Image 1: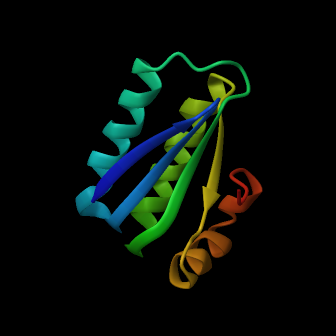
Image 2: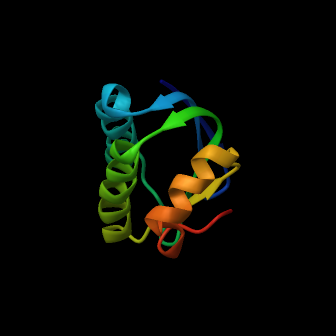
Length: 104
């Protein structure tokens, strides 16, 4: 798993590359937490998680998303999802994650 960050105004895009599974979950968790701790976000800032290059995701990935949602929402930072491939989109829909993390 690799993550590239792009800032545009008060929106930070995290482009995810690879598999979001049990093996890579800790890296994704720590990387996003580091961004949260090291960046001064303005109220109502947004982080867009770009899934266009995610080749696989399992339930561990859902756990990562829910955990990050809890942390970021406490600081009034919105999390959005963009460009999920069909196989990832299906998992996200089944989990109900779009109710709290809408598509960008």
